[in-house]
Amino acid sequence: MSSKENNTTYLYIPRPLLAPTALGTDPVDGLLQAADLQRPITVTFPIWREGVEGDYYQLKFDGNIVGLRKNLGPNPTVGEMLSLELFIDASWREGEHELGYFIQRFIGGSPSTSPTIPLIIDRIPPGGGTLAPLTFPAQAENGLTSLELTAMGNILVATVPRYVDVKWGDVIRSYWAGQAGPVHTVLAEQVAGPDTSLSFDRTYLESLEDGEVAVTYTVTDRAGNISVTSQAASLVLRIKNTPTGKPTH
Image (cartoon, rainbow, N blue to C red):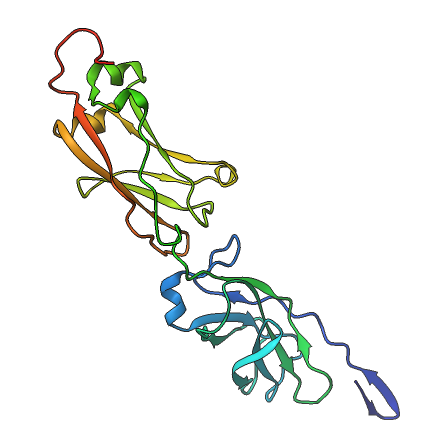
């Protein structure tokens, strides 16, 4: 827009706005924690240059204006942080969204819109409602002895069958007779593979009592959604009470 003073025309050229910050989201990709979907998300950004009392600002979500509108107060300071609250609507779809804001100058003209940042909504627990049991090596099918564990390099590796909606950062937690055991975090390069695995070293296995034990696991994704407990896999430990001699298999 332009203004005239003493027969001189001045052209107002708005300066680019800075992208907002959504507090509590993952800095890597904008993932929201599942627990935060029930409370407002605080969105911050700095006061723009040439900001004056009466300028107003409001959030935009996927290009749509949302939330409350606020106005700049007297004597605004460039760079001072402003905040708005974003309430996540239960009807908003899963997946990636775009979050930004716009300002409207008190002196008029067209609104200015900020760059957007990604915001990911994930409400669905991994596994799709069922998780297959762990698969142990064939050598352990009739019980795992100390000698057999030695032949495995003192590490028992169990296969975690591929589950629905596997993502990097998923945390797989094992449970032995209901007690928490070793965990594994899924790496990005493992997502495309058929299966992943859990490893149990000798120190951990020797901390357990010999005998039959039910082993289960759960999966917690980066958003904090927790799967159902997997079907149980049965394993007989014979590590402490194995007679000396050859392996049983």
